[in-house]
Image 1 (cartoon, rainbow, N blue to C red):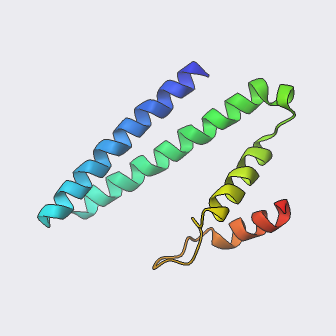
Image 2 (image 1 turned 135 degrees about the horizontal axis):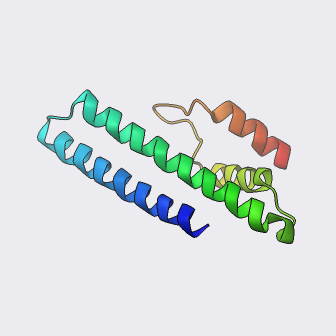
Length: 107
């Protein structure tokens, strides 16, 4: 788990750098498709290592707490839904229908 945690931290740093670069260039009016593609790639990488951390943690400790990966994800979807993260915005999340289904399933 410590190795996976280190990967999460490393990916977060890489994402933060890509985000800062993209924002700085946007402020100067020179953001490129490559900058945005790199930021999205780093965002995906960060999400993947976080999901892998959840997988490893649940595999190693979930049984002790009677917790599954579905419990973690369902709880997270519900919490974020309650916070309004999936509300209609200028660009609606492509996952909003699935998240609504999960939210209704948990309630």
